[in-house]
Length: 80
Image 1 (tube, rainbow, N blue to C red):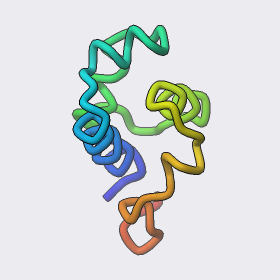
Image 2: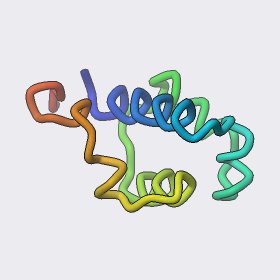
Image 3: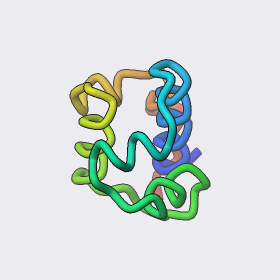
């Protein structure tokens, strides 16, 4: 899977774990809902560190905590 697909999986997991909606996340971090939609449905080709920081902040965690999930293990990610 690509990095963007892994981020989408992680965000969906966190929505369930934290009982949070896309709308609530967008409102909390002041990001356009279309950005979250593009991430969730793998319409983005890259993910910036800025967006990772925002996502982590929205879920009240650090970027390290956000990335600390098996979905981000190197054997799961295809680079290129």
